[in-house]
Structures are given as C-alpha cells and as structure tokens.
Image 1 (cartoon, rainbow, N blue to C red):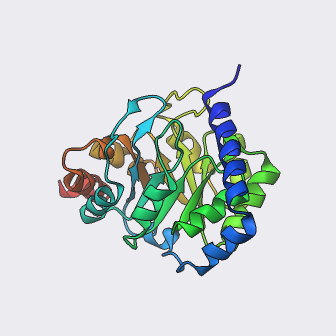
Image 2 (cartoon, rainbow, N blue to C red):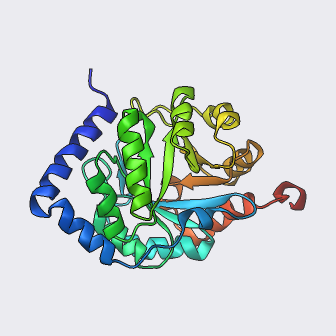
Length: 267
C-alpha cells in the first residue's frame, strides 16, 4: 500500500517534469548563478547553545491547515527578531500549501533560508538556489543512496549547505557515507507520520563526528528544547508551535533561551 511519503514523492517528480518543460535546467542554472551568494546556513547554526531553525509551514498532512493566510516574510522577520538562527520554508504545495515564492520572500530578508521539500532531482536544488536558499533538505528515506549522493554533490556545487534527514540506524550510516555536515533526526516517520520522541536520543551517539545534530519534529516548547540540549542537540527545527503562535517573537525567544548554555543553572 502506498504511504504518505510515496504520495509526496510522486508529486515531487510530477512538479519537476512540469517545471522543466517551462524552464530547462540550463536556463535555471544560469538564473541561479546570477543570484547573489547566500549566507552560510552552517555558520549560522554553529553557535554556543542550541540554535533554532524556525519554520514557515501553512499546512501539514497530519494537522491540516495551520496558517492559510500567513505572510511568510513577516512571520520570518518575527522569528529572526526573536533570535532564530535560520528559517525553514516548506515549499511543497499539495500537502503543505507551500511555494517557492514563500522561499524567495523569506530569503529576501538576508538570513539563511532552508528549502524544506521532497527533493528528488537536481532541478529542485537549482530552484532553491535561484530563490535565494542557503540550504536544502535531503531526506534519506526518500532517496536511494546513489541519488542521495548525487543530490548532495549538486547542492554543494550550487553553493548550498545540506541538512541530511535520518530516522533510523541505516539512514545514519548513509549520512556517514556522504560526509554529511548537518544531520537532522526526524522524530516523525514520514511513511506513517507517527512521532517517536525518543528517536533523537537513540540515534544521536551514532551521528557523524563533527556534524551539527538537529532535533526535528516534536519540539513544542522550551522544555523540549532543554531536553534536546541534554541529549546532545546543536540545533532544533520547530514548525507547528511557532507558525500558530500568537506572539512568534516571544515564542522563539523562549526556545532560544531554553537552549542557552547553563540555562537550567540560571533559572
């Protein structure tokens, strides 16, 4: 039986084919190469304490509509004012109601922006670069290993950082083989959308030495950030709780404070 992930990947391949018919890869690459170089996503996350990647997400398959009328640029500005180190932008349109326009709006602020999508083709890497992204997400569960390696190389050639997403030991091993420098452990299984809140603690010891470790999904508030810090997270990626927050500046600031060194001792 097809899974949620299968459906999302089918949609990704269909959109790539449609986009390529309008703008060939060579023309897209030329446009991307003409864009200003993005800021360093990796450098922005490399700071004392736990860095926060705050997410722009209008909807999700598990929760439905979250923020249909969201102004992506204004919400990202609030995240940055609250102390977020980078902004993740869902660009998948069918289940997450995202777009490359949202990514371009957020990237125009000058802070590092992550294209979070179901990347299956080098074309999408260059779309991200042309829209101003500083990094792309590669989901190991969505890719065979040769494609994972190809996309990782393509992103680096485009001047982008890569967040490599894993959710089990076999996927961690694949991250090692491509020398991943930023590895996210997703507590959500994209095949079923179930959450395993112990996934990060279980997989963190096996992540590549020196790679930034990102805790993804299930981060709802300061207590979760403090727990991730104790378990060895360098970064947390937070979506639903921030995109629905009445005061996003304060919500991000609370997460940033919870991830500061010696936070527990100072409170």
